Image (cartoon, rainbow, N blue to C red):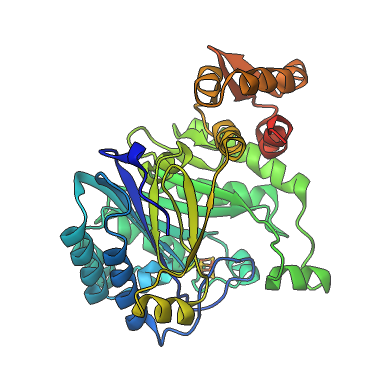
Length: 384
Ligand code: SF4
């Protein structure tokens, strides 16, 4: 169990709830979930018990609540109500919290959206991924292209704060189809987009299909071109690229994710959920049955590690370079010491010369040229 950190007293924190159920397994996914919904009720009870067990772990006010997964839109009205009651009875929640629920298009009929509007949820993050049937089939998504479109139109009638997820770099997706995906999303005037390159994770069906030649391999160059299209189309539409994969209108940037990138504490509830208290990182077991059993016995099924100064520096470099804010040399010096700020400047020399990084107001930022390479650039600046 992560210890309460006195530095976090009176500060805000985020609450993350992992809902580990999905209707079917997407071929590319390596998150923790089960396609059997039999234990959903038991698991929701266990989530509520974990909330009680950990209610004093972080001090301060809950600023954001995020239902992730898995597929949180599979929760019933009663289950949502049970979770919210437990949160509001046991935690101090900010007066204007951001409360996000990840939802899949096939769960967003008018009737189902109403169940979310009757709860405290004020932001929907919809897993569209693509508006094209070919892409959805290749990825084994549970929804149809028509549902992708309809779900957004329906959700917009009840929610102002909507984000949609899209995936680019899908085998067979040319520049034109990707551009069309963006055109559709932008014509629907959603205020926030999260766009990710399709990645081939170990032990996924997608990896096996590529190895067997059933699906063509993912083309890095195509993904790079898609990312360039993404940058120019979103810029034209007035969405700010405030983090590598995230684009939002002013006032609609994700507060939950921003807090995470800024290294603020969060409490992760549910199987596989991670937590961070400013010093320790901890993570729950990624197994629904073992999680429920352990929580029912009053034991937290988690492991933890103390982050070293070097770990924290490397994380700051990684997230800082991915965000518009960049990496502040002053912050590196004040939080990690002169040894780190001098090391950082030395490592950055060549990257600055090659215009992959820029130095502006004592802050290192990724240049346009370096954007698609940001993870590799960050690795060059890591303290090892
Ligand atoms: S719906 Fe989301 S969590 Fe579930 S399998 Fe698909 S990508 Fe993974």
